[in-house]
Image 1: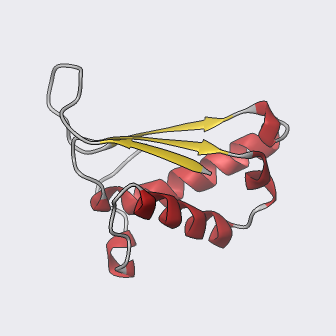
Image 2 (image 1 turned 120 degrees about the vertical axis):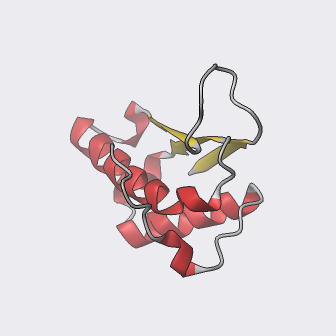
Length: 104
């Protein structure tokens, strides 16, 4: 997994309520079922970690081919590792709770 983080003000106009997160899961990861499973897992994991990222940030998570074979816990550890490399402190597990009222 590769994570890119761009901190700072957004390029568009209008209020920003929190960080924006995007996912790139190519056909190299697997068939449509495998790609959608990886995206759903990553979306849930990222939602739990949005409070840790600066509010006006943009985050792009790119899944590598091995992501389809990884368990949920392995994806969580890998996402935490990548976020730490981007300078995000993910050390307190209490912060991994989803925000109230956050919808898809």
